Image 1 (cartoon, rainbow, N blue to C red):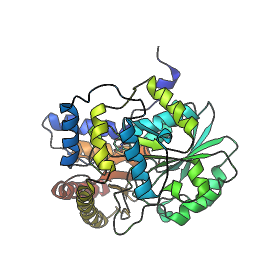
Image 2: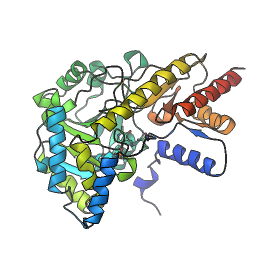
Image 3: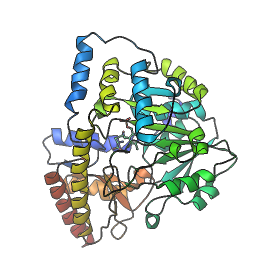
Image 4: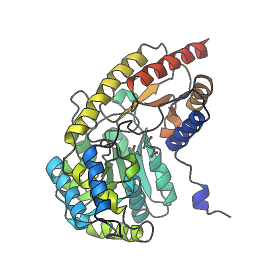
Length: 390
Ligand code: PMP
Ligand code: GLU
């Protein structure tokens, strides 16, 4: 009865585990969830005020599919001010979260059998969207020794005449690794003279720790500017997950037109109220609030890394960005699914198995939760690990 496409699609593991944890809590179980990539902070007031104002003034109708001109200008302004990148309105498409941006891109670009290079560990959604579009994910395993970043040699070996797209995500979900300008330039040089595009998912751009520097892929060279589709949103840094706002920008107006057609036949414009609410955030009006949240995440990262590294059998690298730790459990288990299932059923702690991100021997711990819960969660994980070792 169902299409082959839909039968081959796995549901999002991050969402599945967060929902399970939420259900268990609702049933009265003592569950601590570190599974969702969702800030525990509230959306800053100026954004809420802009939304309330939009409702008051009756801004509640359909808009242009790609977004209202004011919003497109705010996106262009952000990219120019913060990243030194110039885009016209026709080069920008706003969508229901960066997830839809990625959906639009993969559907508009990929044909049956086209290859898409995805560094692992990857965000769970990338390979599924590629497969859903008929493409073939070509996964490169980034090594922990290389801070979970792929090397030019690995990229070179993965490139083929069928390669259509390379997906980069820096800062990374789930490892928190950040690519430097030189590293991006070295990867970019291998693409020169090819038709390969780069999808650069920059969702965690503003969540950087201990002096790490974010570099926008499109800003590294003229060649990378031409071939990069920049994807970003406000969900993480501005605590706006539920508002559903994401965008993409690329210099290829034809490509943006095609994706806009797809969106016109699926979801149309994003919520008119969200559009108005996103503008102050894009214009830098909540930068102070963003910085406060970033500092809180940084303090949590420091403490969580220290506590995890004190647990015998576990180890973790300090994240340079995002709000996840990718915890190495190889001394204890090479079955991350079983490890996480038992941890949840016996100790009420929800984390996401590394296998969901394409790498066995790890779990992902989100520190987008208050410090007291983080301490208690790691205490329970320590008990569980000690018991497992017996
Ligand atoms: N990219 C990455 C790396 C993410 O972790 C997420 C998390 N949801 C997204 C994109 C999509 O976010 P959203 O759809 O909420 O904009
Ligand atoms: N991206 C977040 C995460 O990795 C939210 C869940 C999702 O969209 O998959 O947990």
